[in-house]
Length: 375
Ligand code: NAD
Ligand code: GLY
Picture (cartoon, rainbow, N blue to C red):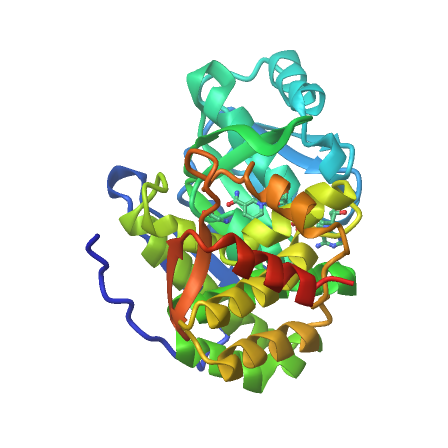
């Protein structure tokens, strides 16, 4: 597989809007990062004009931010309505998706209607899927309000709902017209959600950028303190790396799978405990510790590198020890992972800090890692 060189970047010296471009031919778009962007009409210049806009949010985020977004959109759309879905991963399902279609049809939405996803990854994934399927596709915009959504879920066009038998099993690849990341919206995010987002930030270092990993080691305290310039660079670099990966492999035929570092173990934790017990980012954090340990057991990285990854995950206030479900249960759940092939589990492993690949691993080694990292 040809891998284009990833160019390095440094923190911007200015407080102006930072732009990251995602290059996908006629589906290319920008990710905007800055302060106050959510309420600024200029942020939505790339979205088409239309008579109707529908903001999809939830009962937590809509009271905080929907009025600001509605005001920003009024010059562009004559009619702006907001739909507030129930809040929670357990509502990422057909019934709740149907509430979006009910609102679209009830308000006479047509093929030009633009959907705006205002919220975290749950709202973003559902709105994207609704946009992909309503009248066979209408334009949509991502306005992510969690750190996790700003660095990962709003970028790259994966949209989905859950099925009782599996997470994100029903969905589509469908790209937004623009992603608007307002740093000020993170002020109201609970600390636990901030840490969950940091897990997805940390993942980009080991898989693609050793220098970014070192930067995170130096700046983690500033990120936990919600320092705006530190957050801006963490989001910018995460989006640059995601844009670099998605630009080469939009539909995950190979390279894109590295974005799932820590997710194979993590999904087993989420499913094994029951969804919602641990946040997705918490499970990914612990999963990265286990995947780093597996990489060390495979002789790819030294124990010192695995220890650095573990230390950073712990400093982000994320769990580093998984629940004691038993190795058999972990393995049974990991076989259901979308990366498995013919029942063989494939793990994203670190070849050296800043480079990852995907491979199977001997059962005994996987069991050793599970036994050593669960309690
Ligand atoms: P979430 O959407 O459930 O949001 C977390 C919580 O924070 C919710 O209660 C939400 O209402 C609240 N919230 C959101 N913004 C807020 C704000 N500014 N202030 C106060 N509260 C706020 O969770 P998430 O972590 O953002 O996203 C997780 C979802 O993303 C999962 O469903 C996961 O499958 C999906 N995901 C998708 C991709 C992708 O590529 N599409 C990637 C990673 C994760
Ligand atoms: N979050 C993994 C991906 O977008 O591929």
